[in-house]
Image (cartoon, rainbow, N blue to C red; front, side):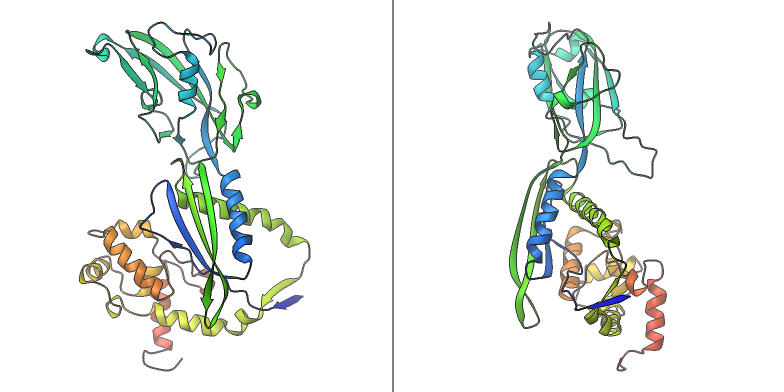
Length: 365
């Protein structure tokens, strides 16, 4: 049995403020939402971003000659307490992609640190950084220049770090490690890579009606994940949590406005997608770049993800910004999911050709 609901106004894609985007900050704009839905979605995403995103963190530290964290070490300027505090600032990145064999078990990073007379130099000291210790491991070091300790004499010491994956903040008392060594020091672990999330809701217009919401999300991370990755992960986690509630009743829901205008929406979209690149007002440089990449129509352009577009020869940030602005004016964007219209990156050329054969340009649809 299908229940008929009225249409909900919802965003078709997310706008990204390219001027402020970096590897640690992103501003995202989604509109339109029905009145009140901006706060509903914004608060849910904020909580997911702050509490549910996973990252690796160092959970234990071992060094030859270290019995406990309240001692000083011969040949090292800092005491062990300071070394432990410095290690808490380590930022390690490793996405558990399913394209490679991956285990969520605790990883061990071992380094035999050797410091010679020449390493000490004229200053008679050598600053050992995080990059010196975590070199050649499965982890990418986001802040390799983080100072860990300062050596003041030649030495050879074995250092072992254990790295786990988790969410949120876990104090050292709650860290559980199998096969823990004698003299192994446990660390408080800050797993969450998201530092700050702000969201704002503003009024926006749909047609002549201004009673709709625009959601603005500002996401700040520490670099272990990018803001775009964090928001994408949070959205998928939220959808996954909601999926269980769909099975409470077996009724299907159809949206009246969507069903009534499905054919019209498809035709309006296709009339934009069949436009040639040369038919929209782009600079000569951007047009030549797209032609050189064998992108002839708007349809072929919008299904192209942004990273892939940047791989094309002579295609730079300036051209990308210009194209995204032009597409936004048309109500389109890069990397659009058009599968509900039966359009994929693999068949977009064929779909456009078929549509043009059925609806020659210049005729009424």
